[in-house]
Image (cartoon, rainbow, N blue to C red; front, top):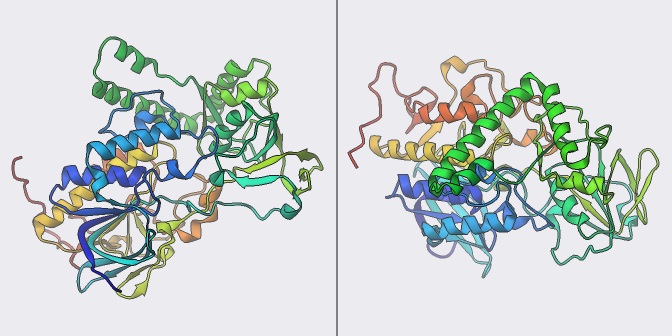
Length: 508
């Protein structure tokens, strides 16, 4: 490869919500580390830059989806534009932009045990040139889905449809849907967001769903935050207290969904009727086949989708799609739904490590043949951590936790003079059954179930699984013992009885 190779201590992949947050923690907790962020797009934002469909917004509250170090000021559910503005402030205030290289598509990552280095080859979009980086540690923050190719089922007859068909992920904001009949296929968070936005200008919107989703309807405000501001409490305190309040409420909701799902469902129905009227029918279109929060709840600020349905602007059809027709689609029961625009809200195509080819000492990595350590590290893959956030709590809560862990790991390696860290099964793990990444009865959205064979496997012990439980991990991960037998430094485990590797930090 021609040109000079650039070396940094840490290379972060992706300038989305995970990469920007991770960069902040690296700067704060490992200030002597050099780093660069490689971003495929021409700007920061990740998910919030990819999706441009009408009404695109968060489906988590911003007090927990926002970073713990940057107060959120605004309504709990925010537009993509507001989130990008927030991220831009984080980048500017902390000079993170100086470290971001936009328009760099990674073509491959290879680890050398002889050099204790990752080599990262990329193509620079601006001129098509191949560029190379080396780093001691690779921090994968690129997310979990393909930002360019969404998931579209292989429906019959798609070529016969004469109207406009588009997946929501590929929506062109210049598209005019005023006075149009719009059909949205899907019922998850994307549908919950785009349908009320379409209903404002479309002639009519129909949601075609294979099966119902749970919806959580609440006002898009927080009384605690508003009251604290009213009495003059400073914003960092407001953020800290309201964030903790949301975390507590999320924990109770998660617990109740497991222990009393029927009661929770009754409460969700009452919240719907508060906006749509007491006579609004819940069955059959809003009675899911699974318990609450086994898939992500679709949050509806101010019950907007149900207000639109009650006003006659939105209708729902629960059925499977048999075939596309010239004028729309025909369902399996024979109903034809005519539409000028059909929007697929059918989810993502799972992308593990950005679908980048990885190798260790010349051998290609098959991620499904590795075992995951707490959803962050992987057996046989040194000096690498993947940020994979939460689904039943805000994704970003895990960005902060993993950021602390990585920085503690890097500082510990410096203290003991280690150049390489990897995880390995222990003697006590001999014979442990290896299972898919996550249990189907724990979390089972379609994109995850479709891609389980791509993901690393899990064991039956807490260390070897990604449990999606923020309330357990917020205590467990900060207390990980790096002297544990699952950690291998420079090819060696700590011997039993050997003094701890950790050294006291010098006073600040």
